[in-house]
Every structure is written in C-alpha cells, then in structure tokens.
Amino acid sequence: MAVYTRLGAEEMAAIVEAFDVGALISAKGIAEGVSNSNWLIETQQAEASRRFILTVYESRTDITELPFFLDLLDHLAARGCPVPRTMHDRDGASHRLIDTPEGQKALALIEYLPGVSVSEPTVGQARAVGAALAQIHLASADFPMERANSLDLPAWQQLLGDCGHEGLASIDTGLAALVERELPTLASQWPSDLPRGVIHADLFTDNVLMLGDTVTGLIDFYFACTDMLAYDVAVTHSAWCFSNDGTRFDAALSNALIEGYESVRPLSAAERAALPVLARGAAVRFLSTRAYDWLNTPEDALVTPKDPMAFARRLEFYADPANHGIFGA
Ligand SMILES: Nc1ncnc2c1ncn2[C@@H]1O[C@H](COP(=O)(O)OP(=O)(O)O)[C@@H](O)[C@H]1O
Ligand SMILES: N[C@@H](CCOP(=O)(O)O)C(=O)O
Image (cartoon, rainbow, N blue to C red; front, side, top):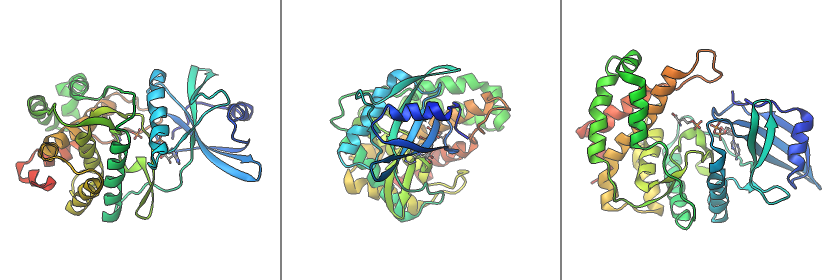
C-alpha cells in the first residue's frame, strides 16, 4: 500500500481549497506505488466533476528537487506529451507544505490521466512506449533545469558495496561473483560522449498508463534527471522486454520498442553501438537498489522488496556476447 500520511476529512478539504479546482467530493487512497502517499481526488466545479491525484511526498523525495520534477511535467505537457499537468495553487505555487505528526511534508495536486498499467505488454504497446519515450526526449531539449543522476555508476558501486559480498551471497550464491565481474567492466566501458538530456530513468510498465495501444500517461518522474538519452532507452528496454522474473527475453517486444523510439528520434550509430553496455548498466542500476532494499527492508515494513535476481538474470542476458545483436548493427 502507499498511503503513509494520515489526513482527516477537514485537512483534505483545506488542502483542496488551496487550489482553485472546486469543492472536494471524495478522496480515496491509492494502493499502488511504494515511495509516496497518493489519493484519487474528486471535486465538483460548476457543473463539472474533476479528478486529480494528490501526492504527499515522503522521505525518499527531496523537497528541494520538486521544482525540477513538477516544472518538467508542465514543460512536457505544454509540448503535447502524455504527462499530467500540475495544478498550481491560488498563489501560483506547484507544491505546498503541510504539517503532519511526522513533521513538515510537501504535497502537489496533479492532473488525473485515464488508462491502466499493462502487465503483459503487446508488440503494439511496446512500440507506442518507445515512441512516447522519444517524444519526451525531444520535448525536453529546451527544458532549462538540470538534475544530476543520483543513481549513476558510482551510486551502484556504493549500494552494492554496502550490500557486501556476504549480503549478496545470501541473496544468491552466484550474485557476488556476477557483480564483481560486471562493475569493473562497466567502469571501463561506460560511455561519456553520447547525446544527453532529460531522461525519465524509471519507465517501467507501472509508470505508463495505456488504453489499447495508446499511451495516455507517463507518470512517476521522481527519478528523472539529466543523463544519456540512450541510457533511458536501455532502462525502458530492461523493463519492457522480459518476463517479470527476467527468465524470458521477448525479441518481438525489443524490436518494437526500438522501432517505436526511432520512429520519433533515430539513434545515432554511436548510441546504437553503446546499447549493450548501457543495458548492462540499466540492469545493474535496478539490481543495486533492489539488492540493497532486499537486505535492508525491515520485515514488518508496509512494502515488499522487489526481487533483485530478476535483474541479475537480465544482466546475464545482456552481458552474453551472443545477445549483443538484439539492438541491431
Ligand atoms: N497522473 C495520474 N493519473 C492517474 N493515475 C495516477 C497518476 N499518478 C499516479 N497515479 C496512480 O497512482 C499510482 C502510484 O503513483 P506513483 O507515482 O507510481 O507512486 P510511487 O512514486 O509511490 O511509486 C500509480 O500506479 C497510478 O495508479
Ligand atoms: N522501478 C523500480 C522501483 C521504483 O519504484 P516506483 O514504484 O517508484 O516506480 C524497480 O522495479 O526496481
């Protein structure tokens, strides 16, 4: 579940009243998600009923970074990308602060977008997601803010180092050896001269809303940052082109995702050549946070940690030279 902050009816009505979006009709906690607290809000304004997502940011989101994330949504939405707009309050602010028993927290009211997250994507959906990813890469080219990627190669090294040889071995007997082989390879081969821009950096199926083959919403931009655009393609590839547990690669989804991306933004020869190593990096990125959470989440926590081995299997796949041709010549 993901409603960590308790808000009474009066508090909720006062929060909504600070925005010019009509009177509060209902507020329902949203079970999906792990990082922040979310509610589906319904209001009545004149004759119209309206829907929004209220997000209260919990400790994993740094409040000082909210202007980057929220201004980015408005920037992309203004350029026709399928991302939610942020509602600005009566003073024009994109987020507000509230006092809670756990201290001061920030909140934002975001446009509700229709659609559902797919669990078993089709080829048509993979193509559409590739195209939507390229669309945000192009549309953010003139976004004026920058944010460093806080989950870059040094951060993966740190997280996996914190897990320790023993910790990794307790997850799986082969995991420490895999990590000790991959980290130096990535450090020596990680590209530094590819086109950069704003990337989503976490475009998993649960962060894409779809109706049929149409992308109706790209959400959860809270890992967005400035990095190599092709790395975002690799992240999305690792998320969309395998069975959940990482045991089965789907070549048709892979081809469709890359084709969809290139229908909007063709990859350069250098970007294409770098995709195998970028995909290995993407697999290590999710392996590192999952392994860390696996070892450090208390047993009575509200969230169940995600399986690190699902990304260890992807890593083995991407590292195998027999599979480097999946991204084309
Ligand atoms: N703009 C939106 N429109 C519709 N549903 C949304 C929107 N934003 C979030 N949601 C819903 O809330 C859930 C959790 O949001 P998300 O941002 O992924 O949370 P977290 O950062 O905690 O993972 C999503 O799975 C989706 O069901
Ligand atoms: N996509 C990541 C986890 C990040 O969680 P999110 O709910 O904020 O997208 C993973 O699968 O490890």
